[in-house]
Image (cartoon, rainbow, N blue to C red):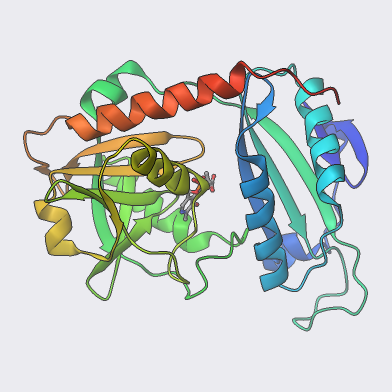
Length: 287
Ligand code: PDD
């Protein structure tokens, strides 16, 4: 695997970061995960704009221009054989003597790598997944895509320990999102997702699902979802760049309606696959 680190494309085994890097010491950094279909970056402008918001929120100056990001990432994808990939990029504040205070002129560390992006298993699409609900133990700046993900890791692991695929997080009686995904519920026939704000990550997949639903005449709303509403929902979905749209068919061990993915899920998944196909059919950009 070829990765990008601080201006160079390198074999992964030769890419090294200082032990004083604040990403290593403090988790002082932000990241993005961008899907790549047929070698092409998916919703690139949207991902780059969220990256900028995360950088601004933690006071790191963007080390690259939009054109430089696009050129570098396109080259990295190409060096890793194009196709479908999940592109991970991370910017940390760089290395400095350990001190909580932000160093004066740090040089950010810029890292990017590609991982295989596998299509969802047929069984997951036909049967859906199980989820648990659990107290949201994270901080109150969840809109920042920060690399410090310890709470998310513990929450996801709790779900896995209970035989579920994802943890749906509850704060003050309201469902916010998943440990690494956004949340949708079909309530009284309306596709509902919690509004953006500091308690959840503004997911790029979330926005696309809303856009596809609206463009195809399906009713949707951005509204808080209480735990009771979630338990009574006709359908529950989770969205993310790596899992696209998942149907939750069991919540805390109870089936959601008849325990099968619902009709609106199937509709949205088809619209999503069609959207991906249009990207695949576009001409390839040259690195
Ligand atoms: N996570 N909410 C959280 C907390 C997430 O970590 C993610 C994605 C999402 C969905 O955002 P998007 O649709 O832009 O992928 C929502 C990525 C995939 C990860 O951490 O690997």
